[in-house]
Amino acid sequence: MENLAVIDLGSNSVRMTINRISNDGSYETVTEEKEYVRLSENMGVKKILQPEAIERTISALKGFKAIYSKLNHLKIVAVATAAVRQATNQKQFLKRVKNDIGISLNVISGTREAYLDYVGVSETLPATNAVILDTGGASAEIVLVQNGKVSNLISIPIGSVTLSSKFDLADEISPAEVFKAMIFVNKIFQSVWWLRNGLNLPIIGLGGSNRTLAKINRRFNNLLDTNDIHGYQLRDDSINQTFEKIIGMNLVERKKVPGINKERADIIVGGLIPVILLMNYLDSDRIMFSKSGLREGILSERLHEIIQENIKEQEKQQS
Image (cartoon, rainbow, N blue to C red; front, side, top):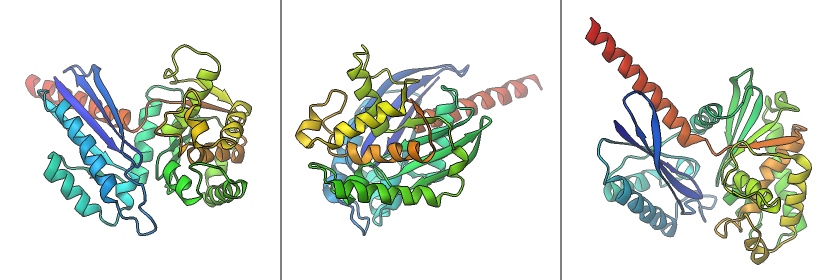
C-alpha cells in the first residue's frame, strides 16, 4: 500500500491530491486540497517571483504538509509549472521550499505538462480526436489528439493571470483592451502551424478558467451539482453568450455571478479569452470539460509503474 501525494504548484493556485494505492493497482482518493496563491502575480517583464506571492505559497504548502505528514507509506510527487518555470529567481524559490517544507519541487517543461494533461484526460474521457486546452494562470497547454494518440502539443505563455494583468482586464473592461488581448492571443494561435489540423474537432477544456465556464452554465441551467462538470458539454453559442455577459460587468458584479469563485473574478475574462478564440479559430461547435489533468496524469503513470514492479516481483519469485 502507498499513499501518493501529488502537489501541483501552478501560477494561480496550488493543489494537492492524495490517493491510497493498493498493491494490486487499485486506488481511492483520500483528499483533494486547493489554495489560491497567485504565485505569478506582479512578476512583470523581468519574471521575478514577488515576496508576498512566495509567502502565500509557502503558507499553503505548510498546510498541505500538515495533512500528508500524518500518513504512512508516503510518496510525494511535487511539480511546479509556468510561474516557477519562467521565474528568474527560480533557484532561490526552490531552495526556500526545500528548506521550509522539506520537499523538492520538480519544475516540469511546458510540453511535459501538456503530455500529462493528455494522459489524465484520456484515461477518463473519449479523446480519440480532439483538441485539449488547459488554461492556467501563466500558460496554456494545447494538445492535438488524432486517432487516440498525441499528434502535436505545445505550451504557450498566456494565461488567466498574465492576460488579465497585461491588458487590464481585472475590473472595468475596456473594449479596446479586450480587442488588443484577442489580437495578441489570435496571433499566437496563428503561429502554431499544426493547430489548423484540429479544424472542426471538439475541444476538451481543463484548468480553472475553463471549469469556471462550465460551473457558470450549470448554475444558470439549475443543475443540482455545480461541481459535477466532468464530461459536461456546451455548445459554442452558449459559451459566447456567457462571455458577452461577463465582459459587460465590473469586478463587483462578476463576484456575484453564480459559479464564479470570488478569488477568480478578477482573472476570469483573461482566462476565457483563449477558449473563446480557439473555438472560433478551429470552427469548433462544442467543448467538453474535464476535471482530470496533470495530477491524474501523474497518478496514472505511477499506477503503471506499480503494476510493472509487481510483474517483475512475480517473475522473480517464479524463477
